[in-house]
Image 1: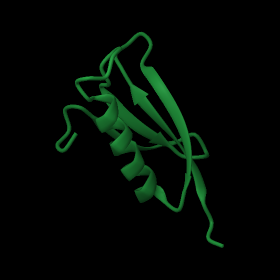
Image 2 (image 1 turned 120 degrees about the vertical axis):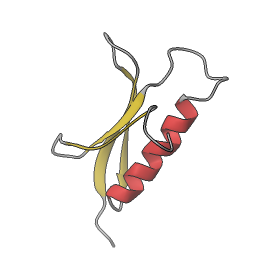
Image 3 (image 1 turned 60 degrees about the horizontal axis):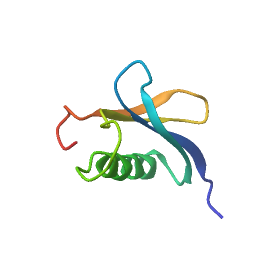
Image 4 (image 1 turned 180 degrees about the vertical axis):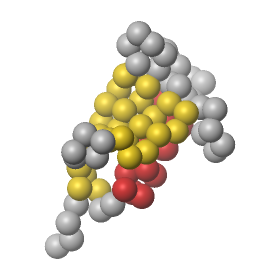
Length: 77
């Protein structure tokens, strides 16, 4: 059985309440967490989605450190 890590993915909007949604995932490594985060971010930016627009996504590791960040202004977002 391989080790899995817990990461927290946050979809961010504009201030003053930047966190629109938060999901915890258990995956094999950071690359898998980044892939999942980008899929969630793309879904949150879909034109048919209601609510506040998603501006960025970040991944936080189990120790509470931000290990990945992508905004709508970055390439490929």
